[in-house]
Image 1 (spheres, rainbow, N blue to C red):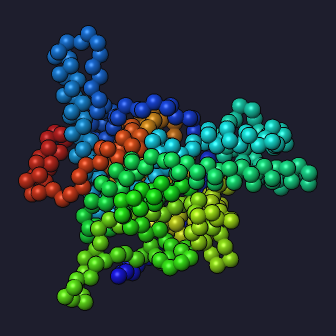
Image 2: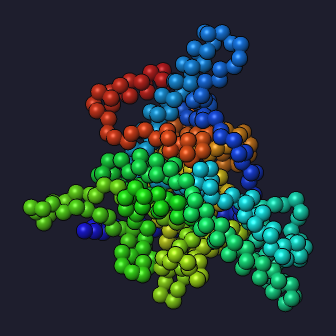
Image 3: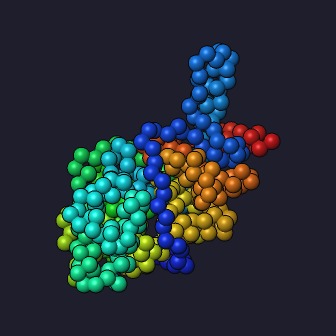
Amino acid sequence: MVKEKTPTSSVEAPAKPRKAPPQAAKTKPSIQHAANPSKSWGDLQADIAAGISDEEKRKAQQSAEAAGKLLTDYLHSALTTPNLVVLAGSGASLGKAGGPSMSDLWEQAKGHKDFAAVCSIVKHPDTDRWIENLLSRCRMAGQFLDQQNATKVAAFLADAEQTIWKACSDFLKSANLESHQTFLRRMARRRLRAPRLKLFTTNYDICFETAAGNLGITVIDGFSYSQPRRFDPRYFNYDLVRRAKDSDEAHDFVEGVIQILKLHGSVNWDQTDVGIVQAAKPSKPCLIYPTSTKYEQSYSEPHLELMAQFQAVLREPNTCLVTIGFGFNDNHLSAPILAAVKSNPSFKLLVVDRSAKDKAQQSGVFQTLSERIASGETDVALLNAEFEQFADLIPQLRALSPAEQLERAVTQIARKT
């Protein structure tokens, strides 16, 4: 049985094009977090250096345990917020899953026979090894080149886009989705009467959908329940309920249901004459490829509806947004998030990134958020961790007993004094 809910929509002003972020290191980061009332980074691993005394070891261990307890309490409070929203970026598909990084896509694009010639035609700098910048130059330069060079650039661009689609599809054949399953399994234990988890992602791959299928979790993704599965945003306003056997009125919400909204499209989306449908091998993939025109493309259907839903949910009261592996380089997404931080009084933001601490010491959004934490605000927290590390840290999202609620309240008051 399905139950329709009231839709909402909204649109924001444009933002600046994306800049290429530095490549992340391959080693696992130390799990650290910054949030009030600590205001500083707490390390969950005790730094036991050689030659230190037993007393120093004990203090280091106690400090790590206190940081761990603080993080667990914060995560339970944040992840049980009535309106829980997740924005998963490319970092959620790296690591164990084995998804391609931007540097991987660059190396694959270099294999094209006209790569050097195209770089020369569009005057792409040799020092810039960021695939998004190269494709942006190709897309814009094609409007001003002579026919011969324009044809060569267009052919390279088409092949590069096909390479991206293939790279984001093929790795799933051997992907390790253990962390995705852990994440979904723990998130699915939220209180049934709370709104469903809304999982937005900029990734093209179907890691979350596959992991949900492995767990028997139902995904509401905006596609019809008939074949062919056709995109229609009204399906986001539906939910699954279980009818009681002895009554036509009584019903319960079905466990294990989440919403997945793919802001930049998906490898199994096909543009057809009858609309966007799901297909294993789409003839015309519906993706927003990595170029500087992503903002303009995001305001065309079906992406416009998904962007509108993302912006609308950030304005809802009692909302917590968790960003995972999102570098805040897509300005059309960063702008509404920062607007929500400033204007929504009940909005919480948890940023999970493997380089959060380093980025907080540089200019940009991470530094802005770090300064907000240092100033005493409690609506923002940063967690220096990979997606798989974060998945393992998610606590049991059950309701606290009255005694546990009292204990937590007293503990929070003590920390503030």
